[in-house]
Each structure stands twice: as C-alpha cells, then as structure tokens.
Image 1 (cartoon, chains in turn purple, green):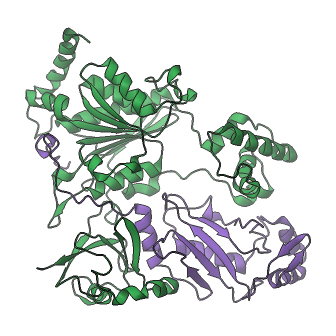
Image 2 (spheres, chains in turn blue, green; image 1 turned 45 degrees about the vertical axis):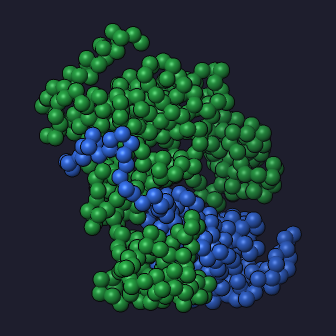
Image 3 (cartoon, one colour; image 1 turned 45 degrees about the horizontal axis):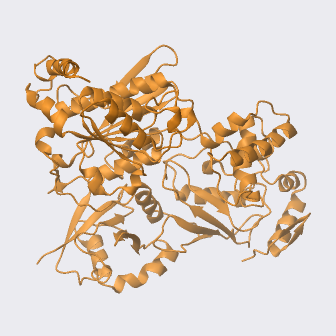
Length: 181
Length: 434
C-alpha cells in the first residue's frame, strides 16, 4: 500500500500548493492528436481540416483506384466527441453514393462505427474500414436495400448503376450528383 | 440536534479516532486532532446530487464533516423522488444542488454545505484546488473523465518527483440497477479513470443495417427513428431532447408505426423514454450501499484511521450479495496521469519553431521522429505543426519560420507533442535560461 500523505499537513486553512492553473488538454484531445500523428493514409485517401486548430472536426476523401467505385471521389465528415475513444467518432458520407451500405442521407453501415467500436481502435481503423466498403460492398447487411438487391441479383447492372450515379444521373427515382474525380 | 445528541455522536467517532486499533495505518496517531480536522477544516466536494449524491451528503454530514460543497447541473424531476430523499414534491423543477444543500443545512446544525448549480466544466482549476477530497456520484463517463483530468492537471512535480501535497484523492462511486462499483483514486499515485477507460461497458448500439432493414425488437424501431428519421425530418428544428414530451411523443408515434409495419410487439411510451434517455432503472438500496462505502473511504482518507480500499470494488446484488475488490493497475502510458512533462532548455524564445522541432528530433535527450505539436495559447487550441498529414502540414508550414515568441509560447505553455516513437503524448515546456 502506498504511503498516504497526511492530509493534515498537506493543507491547512485553505493553503494550497503552487500548481499550474492551466487547464490541461482533454484526454479526447490528446488521443486524437496521437491518432492523427499516426495516421497512415493509403494513397487513395486524403484529409481536409477546415480549421487546423480543431483536430476534432475533419473530412476524409476517398478516391478508390479499383473496384466498382474506381474514379469516384467520396467525402466523409468526421466529428470526434468529448467522450472519444470511449465512443466512436460520428462519421457521415457527404457525397451521395449508390452503395448498399450507405444510405441516401449519408449514414454508413460499418460495424466499427457503432456496435463493434472499441477504445483500442483508431481513426486509422475507420479509414481502412471505409476504404474496404468501396472495394467490397456488402449486400448481406444493406442500408440501401435497392442497391443491395441489384448487386445480389445482377452484378453487371449494379456496376452500370454505380457508373451512372457517379457521372450524375437518376437511378430509379433518385438523382445522384456527379462525383467523378 | 441538541448538545447531548451531538456529544453521543462524537463519542462514537472518538472511539475510532482517539484510540489505536489493529487496522490502523502505521502513520495513524490517535488524538483529538483528527476529529477537529474533520469537523473544522476538511473540505469535501460532492460531485452530483442525485441518487448517490443525496446518500453521500447525508452520510458525510452525519459523520461530522461540515465543510462541504456540492455541484450538480440538474433540476429535480418527479421520477427522482423515490430515492433522492432530500427532495420533496414541491421541489420539482428546482436545482438539485441548492435543494440538497438547504435540506442538509436545515437538518444538521453546524453543517455548512455550499451548493453550485452549474456544470462541472464551468468551474476553474482554482475551485477544485481548494478541496481535500472529492467524492463523485455521477452517471456519466464524460463527467468522470473531466474531473479526473482536472485532478491530474493539478498535480505538481518538482524534478520529476510528485509533490504529494498536490494530490487530491478522488472517491468515485457508480451504480447501475443492482450493480455498483467504487474506486479510490490518488491521482498520480494510483490508477486513474483514464488508465482503465476500456473497462467501461460500451453503450448498447444496434447495427445500422439491422435497424434499417430487419428490425426484430421494439428498441430497433426506436433507434431507427432516432438515428435516421429524426435527422431526415427534423420535426422541431433541433436535436432530440429526451426531457421534452413533444419530442418523445413524436418518436413514440413514428416508431410505433414502424413496429406495426414489421409486426413487432411491446413498444411503449416508457420504453421510448428509456431508450432515448438511456435510462437504467435506479435501485435505492444499491445507491445506499455504494454511498456508504464511498463515505467510509472518505472518512479513512481524511483521518488515516485505516487503510483505504486498494483500489477497485465491484458490487452486485442481483443474485444474493457479491463483492469483489482488486488492485487495478496503473497504465504507464496513460494519457491523463502518466507524468511526462519534459523541459527543453533554450537560449531564448526567439528560437524558430523549425529549430525547436529539430531539437526534439536530433537532440540525444529526445530523438523523436515526426513530432506533431499543439498547444493551448490564450485559452485556445492551436495546432502548431503536423508533419505527416499532407493537408495539415500545408496549413501549419508557415509556423515553422516563426519564433516561439511570435507564436505566443512562453515557458508556462504546455506543448503537447505526439510522436510515432511513443505510445502516448508528451507535454513539453520550454525553459529559457536568463
């Protein structure tokens, strides 16, 4: 057992020790700086910081160089909250995309963004997770059910739909804005 | 309370504090001084005036502590009254801290509880510094982490040696239904909240694709409305407020439609409230048990009359009664409590940031690889330089040719440095020789 200081000697009558009264950076802040310093972006990814002094808000841009989405440019917004890394960052896709695991509001179905998040994971893990979604869209757990059905039943048509959407155009009732690089 | 009563109470405290015993700590000296200290000088902050807070304030006051302050940002709700016994029906809508303090002060003569009706974040380090012991009865991990980080930032080191007089012990209690836990934290000496952050259970979340396409539980329907429909339709032009009945009603109606559509039963208004506000049924007896142990620990720390809990206790009364205590380990790379302030001697503050970084890289004492540097300058976060992220590098490059003085850095400034060679961040301070 650590020898406890004697409180009685430590502080008498409000006499307090000389501390720096500076507020320290929050643990979330320290952790995100660590994450960003160690970010190892694949060559298909880039970042944008609207305010370089705010490391908690940034964008990730993915330009896949293979797969269905080759040639596209997709922007994701990251918001890291004060409870990071206990809670995952909030990630949304800002580019409208025809994708089984991303809905038209930009919600992303990636397990580590919700139910499988753990504090040992980092921003890097999410980057790789998102990149993987573009290489291997998963029709088993769809968020955009129409896209998932097409991918499952007619791969060729899915491929054409993706190209059409990335060029800008309608898929069924829904208009997609051009997002080619 | 009359003289006789007070005397009786004191006599039982005296038996503990003025006599030696087999469980006393070696540095414990039986004397009337301990009781005097406890009653006159010992300043305690109780964080949270809810289920645990009410119990703790009552226990501490009856134990003889008189200099107490309580901080809580919440107001009293009808649903609190079954267990937060310092509040009455007429108090609904009033501040918890103010009401609890008034109740204790009125009931226990000589007791002096000062309330603070605000967020913990609204108080400055000076406020927290004045206390001997801080007792937390919180329901939020963010708040715990905040207090923890405040207390570690108050630690003083002289030549790498912790000045123990700057340590403010933190007693942290928590309950969830029939389960509870308690820990005694001596910031800088024993493991802190951040050391074992991953021990906290994650919030219950459901896979987005499940709630979107194959909901099976009423909770799935509620989550869907919360995560997808609310942002889409934004019915009240604001974020969800779990305390606003209009919001809950809207969510209830939408999720009920969804539940009907998928043939899911069991969706109720109360369940919606529970899921949205993340309500865990609170059990009065669990609170009472955890609070009693918290206060015993406060008493032990304040008087040294017995060894403190070392350092983590879990409690469950779901099946019978079970407790287990163990010694959690300190994380040497903890972002909050591992001491790593390093001093960089400099000739003057005219040194350019580039030269400063080169010292961090090439000086034998540091040998960092690609340090990124941030600092809080006049209260604002500032990113000074990040080497490995192209966009940030470009945005911060112009700082390299500025001097530390121009950047607003003094020898008081904490320079936060992250580097791929280290598992946690460092704090650097410049030391200018005059």
